[in-house]
Length: 348
Image (cartoon, rainbow, N blue to C red; front, top):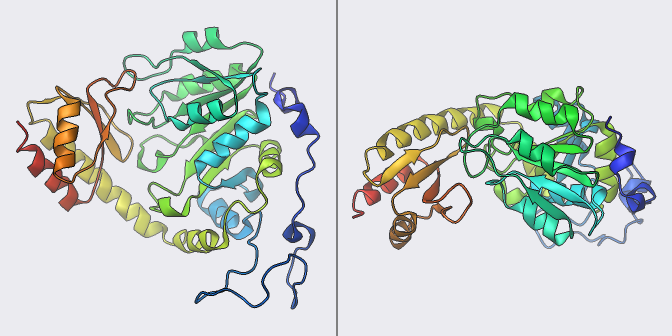
């Protein structure tokens, strides 16, 4: 039976978070002399001399409307990478605990584990890029705190079988993290809808992909109120700056435009897949629920270097387990995709 207190680090249980000036006073005033800010303003067209809302209330309220989740179940981080790091720092004792990774997957899980001195136990996906539930079960012990699952998966592009993820949620006494960075491009429904069913579920999403806000660095985590409260205690007091909050709030009013872009991108993805299949050096193109495709080739290194020489950058994944000979290609604009195809026609 999952109990958050059983996996929370003792020092985090006893942690008294930093209390900022904006935590101690909430509301509006005419004179602010509490936070040692520069009262004269900023050397910019707009003043950013005041500290931002530490809990990003307005952004969370708008996300609550879009996602159908109460604001108290939302954590905002400096990219999803901050949410990943906070989960390690809150739940994993360095040098003692371990986490389960299922490669090939997003590389930051392992980097964050290494930074926090947490053992990673790798259970590779099957040949069709699905979970090896038996292998995961064998890898779990009393010190296993987190399981990371990227779905749709990066770099393979496919969605992970929903029933398999629910099997883990129902039987694992630690936290299952489902990273849905690419969910906007997928036919699968989000696991956010399952938050009330599984107390040990954390769902991560981002504004970097479909929303086109990678430069603002805003990641989202959705979880029980209890888990979100822990993450808010551990995070830095002002982890999302004022400019990012303002721009994100403005962007979140434009759902129709984002939905239009998603439809266009998916149409471009289908066109690109069809045309790439005509090249004799393309061996396979794996099914994708993301804004990229994984393409198995006869010579990934040669093709990658050839494209670089022509000013086109894709991701060479040939050294990644189960991705030998593969290139990961992000879907671009129609003009960018056409340039890619025309350049590949010159490859010998």
